[in-house]
Length: 385
Image 1 (cartoon, rainbow, N blue to C red):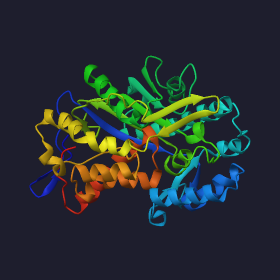
Image 2 (cartoon, helix red, strand yellow; image 1 turned 90 degrees about the vertical axis):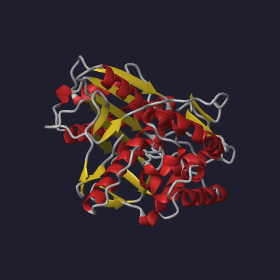
Image 3 (cartoon, rainbow, N blue to C red; image 1 turned 135 degrees about the horizontal axis):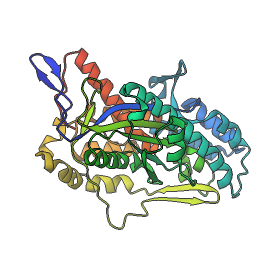
Image 4 (cartoon, rainbow, N blue to C red; image 1 turned 135 degrees about the vertical axis):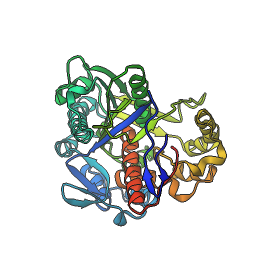
C-alpha cells in the first residue's frame, strides 16, 4: 500500500488501485470513566477487597515494566489529560464492586454489564467514523462486528445496526472470541467483501471491555495481574470500500494483500476460556519467543506478492498489534527495524494498553497523525505498508 511519495517537492498521494479495498475513515471511542495508571493499583485492590502487600508490589512492578513513563504519555478525553491503562464504563465501575468474588458463577452479571457497554462504545466509535467518512449512514451496505467481550443471541451486530439505524438489508458478519487478532481478521473479511461486491461500503466495528475477565488478585493466578496491567477498554471503527469517490471520500490506506498463518501445536499458547466465573486467559511465557522465531517466514509470505524482500523491512512502515512490550522488542530486534518503525504501535500501547481487537485502529490513527506531521514538515515518508 502506498502511503505517499515526494512529487515536485510536495507530498502527493497515490491513487488507490482499481478494485482494491481502501480504508476510508477511522473512528474510536472509550468509556466515560478512565483510570490513570498511578491510581490503578490502589483502586484495583480496593475494589476487590484485597490487602495482600506482595501481590500489590508485583502489580506495581508490572505497571512500570509495561509502561515505564506514564507521566509523559497522555491523551485528551472529556477535556481532561489522562494517562490511561485501564478503564471501565461508568455504570460498570459500580457493578464491579457488587460482584461476589470467591469462585462464584458471575458470568451472567458480567454479560449483563458487558453486552450493554460494548454496544454503547461501538455505536460511539462508528458514529465518529461515519462523520469523518462524509457519506450518509444509508450508504453502508455491510457490517463486520468484532468482540471477545460479549455473548448473546441475537448478537451484538444486530444491536449495533439498530443503534446506528442501518438499513434492515445491511448484510452482517460477526467475529466472536478471536481475541487480539480480531481487528486484523475483521480487516481481512471487510477487504474480501469490498472487493467482491462492487460499490459496497463496509463498516468494521470492534468493541472490548475487560470486565468479562476482571478478577481479584490471587497468589494462585499470578498471570491475572499481567492482564490488569496490560489490557484496556474501548472501541474502534473503520469504513472500507473499493474504488472510492474522490469527490467525497478520502482513501487513507490501501489493503493490498491479506494472509493468515496458524502455527501447528500452539493452540494452548494463548488459552482463553469462558467459564461460570467469566473469561480467563493464560498467556504462555514463550509467546514472545514463538513470535520472534516465526515472524520472518510470515513476513516473507506477506511481502512476496508486492515484490519486496527482507532487505526492504526499513523501507516500509509497520502497523503492528502491540500485544506487549516484549513482543514489540523482539520483533524490532529480529527484523533489525529502526526504532521509529514501531513508534505508532508503542504509542498506542502506552496510551490505551492492549485493547484487544480495537488496538489496530488506534495504531493506524497514530500512523495518520505521524504522516500529517511529516507532511507539514515536508518530510514525506515515501514508504509502503
